[in-house]
Image (cartoon, helix red, strand yellow):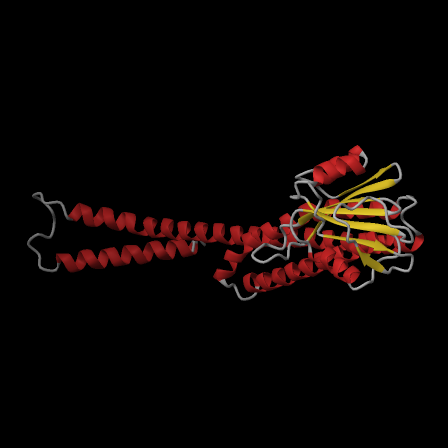
Amino acid sequence: MALSPIAGFDIGAEGRARPLAEPWPAPRPAPGAAWRWLHLDLSDPALAEWAETHLPPVAASALLQSETRPRCTPLDTGLIVNLRGINLNPGAEAEDMVSLRLWAEEQLVVSVRMRPIIAIDELRRAAEAGHAAYTTGDFLAALAEALTDRIESVSLALDDATDEIEEAILEREDPGAADDLAPLRRRAIRLRRFTGPQRDALVKLSEGHHALIGPGARVLLGESANRTTRAVEELDAISARLTALHDHLEAQRGMRMAQNGYVLSIVAAIFLPLGFLTGLFGVNVAGVPGLEWPWAFAVLVAVNVLLGLGLLALFRALRWL
């Protein structure tokens, strides 16, 4: 069964990329090329056999894993790098980040994905146009920068959405804004889940002393790590702000319930003696005063009104109202 790469390129020393034409790509570049990039699909049925044949066992196992988290692991002469990209596929949620598995050597980069990733697709289109990174280290730096650009854009969009919901709740007191609070918190948490480990992987990649990463690539990777760190801090701040807004709404709801209960207690305290009095005069037994007096009902009503006003004045004097 032949391997079917999504794309494959041999890249010369000056970054000139030439698409591969062979049906079963070997893991080494053609003569005259500096390095080879193979971009593969995890669902390719021939991938497992090819990886186990041409790659170190640990690297092959890392590329074939169904579930991954961002990491950077040096292995002999190569690097195992797992990263995550913003999910910009149609109908998908951006924070449902897509996994990208990489094995990088001096003359080889193998990238494996399950779903399309816009960042690496841009690098692929640039290679198809004949332009690619000079070295595998430069390729990793360019990929990290492209992934970080999209993480920052989504993080800024979440920050703007948080500003809007904050203004709606705290300034305009818009009751409908509370409906957007939980989905926004969920988005921030899901994005933070992979952005934190990605920051750690980029920091390790930039601060390591692996031979694949030259000085220029190390600087660019350090900048991507720094920007990812800022994105993580921004996501933490967003989560904290949304939690504070949730607590504010809960406090307001508790205050309203307490106030309503207090009002009901005052009403009950006023009408309890009035109800007792009217109930006492409403019994249908002999001896009830005023049965023969035509002004008895008016007097009873007046007494109830005066009693109610008296209780109201007393509560005000006691500062219960």
